[in-house]
Image 1 (tube, rainbow, N blue to C red):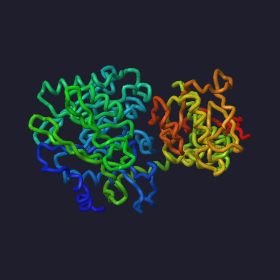
Image 2 (cartoon, rainbow, N blue to C red; image 1 turned 45 degrees about the horizontal axis):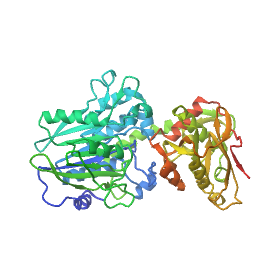
Image 3 (cartoon, one colour; image 1 turned 90 degrees about the horizontal axis):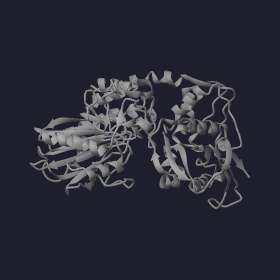
Image 4 (cartoon, helix red, strand yellow; image 1 turned 90 degrees about the vertical axis):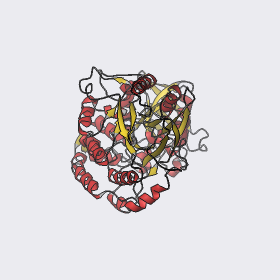
Length: 529
């Protein structure tokens, strides 16, 4: 799709009525997660062959093309990000935020908020990122005064000017960041409602009445904040990877989602899924008193019809060259082959399934998690005896899944296992590899009618029967937690779910490094009767 054709396509989204100086267009992304190269329909890195065939989405070079076209149509605009630029691909592993900084500078962002993954490698990495970008990074609901890396650079809010009008921007990050990332002991996180009220009071004292919150807090928290605080015009969200849309069937709500404020006003909430698949676009009309009279828009799909900016594409290719060195990096060794086959890992216990499930559980066991579940179809290779490279781990786990943690009743765990073995005759990828749990199954019973038996959990070093009424901490991958492979019960019954943990391949690599030389094992955690 050429620049002109993009303009024509985007023109359909212009709100009704004239666009004046009182119309501000907010362009936005969130949860980009280092998807600098184009992605597939499953959000993992797309091959050059498929990209050339127009089968891929997103990527920074394609995003730049769309942003340029949008700015041409809506010159009175800002481009902001809802956090979590860090983590997700080898671009982050290799460059730790510096590649993201280069891409965001090239695209021309005006501001972003801090996501929890911006703290994954401590305040030092975030500081280097902030020193490299050409725009402010904001966070209001944390005290960074005792953190020397951030105290002088990380601000709660800022003022930006467009068409002679001052606009206040406020940043939010998850209140539980200390427990899901690595911000260090010097930073304390606080209630987002109080933080936003404080910053709004500052803006009002300066006569600023156009206020946008950049929130990496999640769709639910954003609605709560909007309902509790007067004076917010728009919340640009992130963290829950929520697609809001008026036309797409899988959307979780309308774009924008309107929430009534305490004084009877309204706040518009937007979010644009994740991974650079969409560019959010909301055109907001203010009256002379700064009151929003209309807000309309729709996320713009960045698909393979859009031509990548050639200059930025070449820069990305150059940045990608050292990634092959990372793929050759030795992360551990094995005393024997870690066996895998489609038949083995999708019909019963397999050595690769045990490795991955054990690594998942080890990573989060201190968080009150006692059970791990990994789908056999997510395992795609074996590993030979001897040295193990990161490239081999990435071949086993090519889907760039993240760890998901949640709580689930014992009865629901058994029901999930029932679904997991319901298509074992077809060697289906849903088959559950596990850790911290063992079970038996039979195919002499109809699917979902009692195939699962002898479910036990490990407690104090002993195996005990699972308690249907008890609540257990579970770790899985984000694909299953959202209902993939028909694990619908994970999507519907999980409590306190967090789907944006570390990359699964990196977790396994770190486990191999810490437990080398690794000894593959089968220990009867899955039995067929």
